[in-house]
Image (cartoon, rainbow, N blue to C red; front, side, top):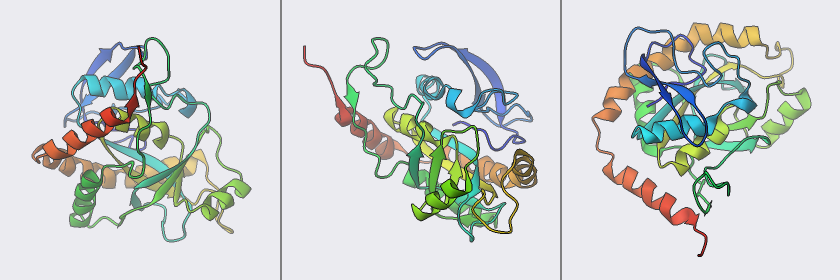
Length: 265
C-alpha cells in the first residue's frame, strides 16, 4: 500500500528503497506503521516536482514489482460543490481527465515498455471493495465523509481560472486536483486495487464572496485536517491486510489480460 501527497504530516513510513525500471530510477518509501514524517510524496520530499513531471509510471511499476496489491492514496482537492466543505473527506469514485502532457499507459509502443496496446476498461476506475472498507472506517471514526464524487484532474501547476472552475462544475465534477490521473489508470493497468481519500481544502475559485484557492490556504486546511485521513489509513491498512482479496485480484488480472491487444508476428 502507498501513502501519498496531500497528507504531509502522516506517520506511515518504515524504510527507503531504490528501484530501477524501464521508467527510470526512483526512491520509494514502503509503508508500514512507524513514527516518521517522511511520507511518500508524489512531488518529492520537498515538493520540488511539479504535477506534470511526477514519474507516475515508475511509482506504480515499482509497487507492482514489490507485489503490491492495494494502493491507498490521499489527495488535496478543491471543492466544486457547496455541500463539500473545506475539511470534508470524499471517497472519489469517478474522474474526468483534463491532463495533456503525461504518460498514461505502460503500453505506449516504445521498445522498452510492455508490448501491445491496452484498452483498459475504466467504467469503475476505483476499487469498489476497497472504497467500501474506507467508508465504513470513516463512519466508525465519526468522520464526515461523502461516499462518492467525481474528481477532475487538471494539468497544473497553475490553479483554474473562474471560467474553468464554473465549466468543471457544469460538467458534473465535484472536486478538482492535479494528481489522480494518470495514477489511477496506471494502477488499473498494473492490476492493483486503487482507492483515494480526497481532502477538500477550499472552494477553488467558483464561489462568490469566498476567498480563491491559494497555496497558503491549501496547506493550512491540510494541516488542520490531516489527522482524519491518518486515522482512516491506520485502521484500513491492517483491516485490508486481513481480508480475502483472491477473487478481486483474480478478476483484475483477467481484465488486464483481456484488454491487451498484442502484435501479430
